Amino acid sequence: MKRHARDIRKRVEKRRKERRHRYGTPQQQELWAVTDEQRYGQPVVTYDHYTFEEKHPLFRKEAFILKMLLSACLVLITAILFKNPSGSLEPARQFVKDTMEKEFQFAAVSQWYEKQFGEPLAFLSTKTENELKTAPKQYAVPASGRVLESFQKNGQGVMVETASNAKVEAVNEGIVIFAGTKEKLGKTVIIQHADGSESWYGNLGSIAVKLYDFVETGKEVGTAMTSSHDQARAVFYFAIKQGDHFIDPIQVISFE
Image (tube, rainbow, N blue to C red; front, side):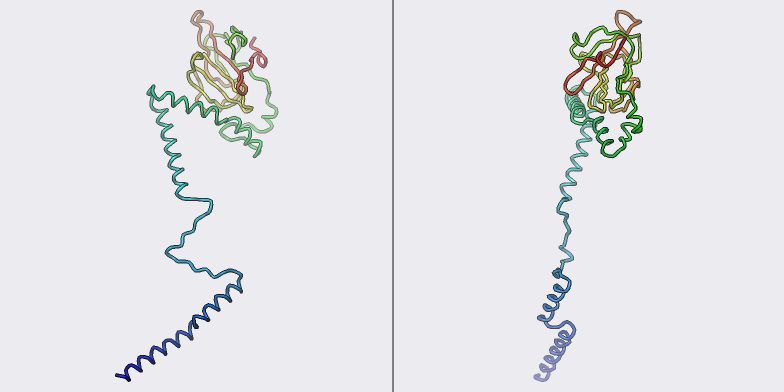
């Protein structure tokens, strides 16, 4: 029995010596680690394979996914608003339109982009830089005719009499930020230009453009409304807005 116990102790001691020969003592292992740190100038770091997870200090996956879901929901809700013809949703639709008009200046963004990067945004304009520089600064005439109601009387724009079903054309290139019906103006198109100004075309018999279309100078935006008193004549409304104020179109356009 004692002999058997001695044999077991010998085998254990032998295995311990073999381990020390292969890996060294715990004190030697610690010394080697310090030596490596001194050698490479970096601490020896060990990672738990199952618990280690790399995280970027400026990126949170959960927050990013939440923002993506909220954005998708917002787009879906907006699509439902404009697809559903219910009159009860009109205030919400109008709020979205007003926000897009006032908060996002499409033409102004195009101008800024061109100044920063040297080329205009493709979906806003295809003209070269030289063409833009040589383009005339004066507004074109939306439709030939005579002014029936002056700016001083109207307060915002002018009423112009023209031929029946006459085409009303854009006075300058820009983005259509409104194409629909406005109170007191009827069918109306509003175009925002690169300098932030807007041209308004109201009292139209028909509209030939869509919201967010890019239109060049002279492109048809609609037709004038035929007069109820004289079927051979038509009348349309025209205004120019700069900032929060309207200016007299006669200062920049000669209708007669």
